[in-house]
Image (cartoon, rainbow, N blue to C red):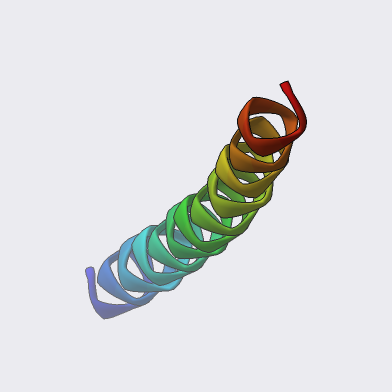
Length: 44
């Protein structure tokens, strides 16, 4: 039982880490896209 619980916790922690990285990358890309939009608006 303990081994199964350990694997479950390990998998869940890895999944949370992947989701966290995805959110971080998404927010960074979103900020860059917003900056490009602002630059285009200023040029226009």
